[in-house]
Image (cartoon, rainbow, N blue to C red; front, side, top):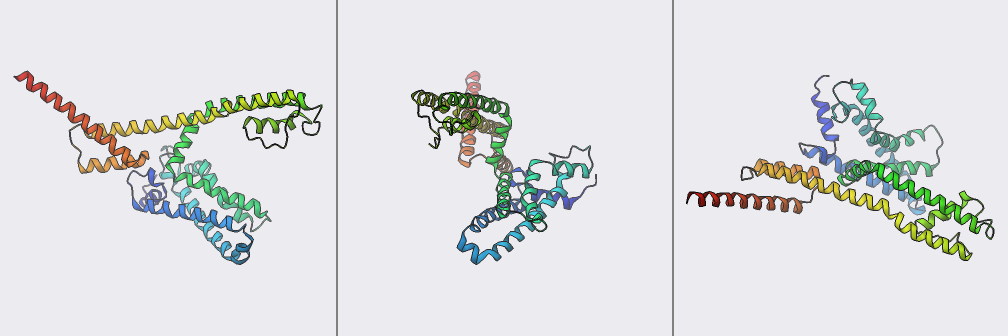
Length: 322
């Protein structure tokens, strides 16, 4: 594989700023510009649904949409072209074409493609404008590439996937049980609302989630008691996924703090922080998405601990010599 400085430079610009070890300003500028463009696209999509604005500004909004799609298309092609520079896809054993194909099948690349392909399809195929707007909304998902918080959430979802699947399975079982129970209790008095168990699943869903739209409600005493029990059960069960995600999210943040603490401890092991080490710690803080005040507090505490330990050793040696 040949060394290509220009492709490497393009890859560093396209790579999200928080993933860049070098912290180059072109990468940050590109991120900000793309975030602004995505936000403006969402605003434009919403404005198209306002009758007064659509009537007066529709040509301008369509031009803005076309320019945006051209920019997103160039970005998509550039990301595929520079993908051989990515350590996430290049293991050194595949050709550039194989790496590009592998990247093109990745979730974020598919999202990038979905965000632009409806525009080109609309040139040749009649597409419902409502469906076109729905696909344009996928550009919001592109923001996840530039948000460290979204990256953290995705890591949490991946790490807790089996646990969440188990919780969702329990919820589905309870929902089927609730639908079956209410069907046999209420079917005789409300044959239209509870015509079948699948139809009763709508009631079980809104009851378990404690939404309670009120369009379908039990009217028999037994049905109301059963509905109340299902509501109470839903309060506890639907808190399971939230609890799993919140605890895992907290654990993920704690791991980042621990990693930063380890780096700080290594940096102050000689008793001082040089300008180069301080700059390195700032880059690590940015990569781990830690708050500045929190990072400064960790550094101060470790500095104080290090000086206390060293002073204690010094006093001990002085006592021994005496």
